[in-house]
Structure formats: C-alpha cells, structure tokens
Image (tube, rainbow, N blue to C red; front, side):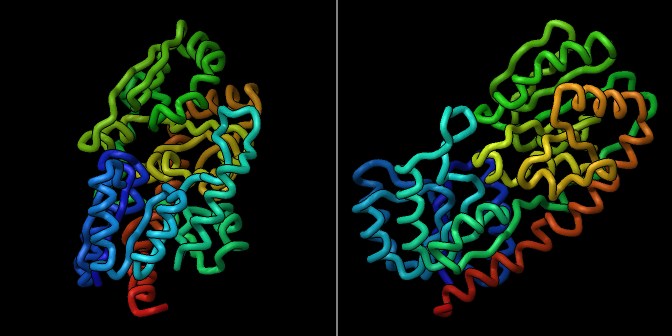
Length: 331
C-alpha cells in the first residue's frame, strides 16, 4: 500500500499529532509512506497531480481543494482520505459571525469527493455525516512512550499556571489577563508560563515566555502545575480536539477549562480538573488548586490514567491503519 500524506507543516501541531507520529507504526505494517507539504507553485501542482496515480491513497490533512483542482484531484487519485481536527466549515472565534456560506460550500464539496473522512471529535463527525456517511472519529493522541508523568515536588516554591499552543489561539488566554492580575496580587508566588511564539505581559504576575520547540515540549509541560484551556462557546470551539488538555493530562497536570465541546469529554469536573465559566469560577477553582498541592497531584494522576486509556497513538494507530487498509482494498 502506497500512501501520500499532504500536511500543513512539519512543525504544525496537527500535522505532528495526527499524521507524522503515526508513520513508524504504519511503516511497520508495510505501508509505504510519502509525506509532502501542500503544493503551492505551478510547478509543484503539476508534479503533485502527475504523481497521484502512483499512490493507492492520498491523505489530506484539514485543507480543502477548490474547483477545478478538486475535480482534477478526484479524477487522478485512486482513493482520498480527509482528516479534520478543526471546524473548518465555520469562521474562527475572532469573527463576529461564525457562519460563512463560502466555507460551508467548500467543506461540503470536499467531503462529498472523499472516500473516507477521519474526524477529530463527535461534533466534527456530525458535520460530516449528512454529506458523507463514511466517517469515523479518531481523537488527537499522544505517545505514551514520550509523555512521562511529571515529578510532584512539595519543595517547589512557585506554582506555575501553564498554557501551550499556537499564536492563533492565544487570544483565548489573553482575554483572561484581568484574572491573572487578581491571582497575582492574591498569590505572589504564582507565575504564568506561556509556550508559544506570541506572548503578552501582566502587571501583577510574572510571565515566563518560552518559544515552543519539539525537543523541550514535554519538559515544558511537566513544569506546569495547573494547565489552562479557556475557550468561548461557539462553533469554532466545538470543533477543537483538546490537544492542550490531552498534553496536560498526559504528564499528570490538572486542568481548569471552559466546559465547551470536547473539553467536557476530557475533563470530569472535580475529578481530573475543574470547569470554569465565569471569572469568579476561574478565580475560585484556580485558588483551590494553588492552595492544595495534594489535590493537584490527585487530579493530575487521574487525568493521566484516563488519557492513557483512550488518547494514545498506541490505542489509535491500529484504527488508523485499519481505515487505510480498507480503503486500499476497495472498502
């Protein structure tokens, strides 16, 4: 079986966690994999479409093809598998109106021309199903061989609130600056660590700014004491697949999150983290975790236990291969 994977970028989280980390397993099962960025120039497009018939499957991650390129893709590719982990049929949370007829049309056209769709959560599956019933949920997963349990130290003086993500999502965190100012005045030993490529400052709380890199990603996560995932309640957020929470929990960090979309599946309130809807709830839940190290450890260990049951490549990789195998055999 020969599969061509088109990804958004070698360092893009979705590419790494939904495609690249699966390649060793797929290759161990006899799959011959080729990975490429999406073609941009005329020369790259010519090469891409010319080479398509060589592969049994072309695997597309998130991006949609416009006509007439979509028609040519359908004509040249033997099988098309499409993977999405964002609500690409809606505008993002910064937009005044999430509804976009253009985005919806492109999404529907793409879905109808695919042989199979892999969705990152149940909401995305529900968006796909009316237009293509050949859809299955595979959650974003971590490698349990890489994500080790953090060390819980009672001698650590600071309590580190942590957030990891890309610049497209940091606006969710920046909206919480008034909360961080209040927490900083209340607890001088609390700090905020942001792992990203874009940052902001607080007047009353120390902010540690760390540029993300793959080699130090897990170590950075292990340095968090409390993981944060604020969102807004809109269709774009419903489509998110909760990688931040899965990463936090993967190393045993308790989570405080907005109970929206998949966050409600990953976090059970008062068991492996807390829900927080209002500024008052955020302050209260964070204060409780800041003041209680034993509670942080208990919730962190419970979160890790649950992630290891359902959100690892060790459990998801066989399902990934099964889909490709069925498609290559004409399923």
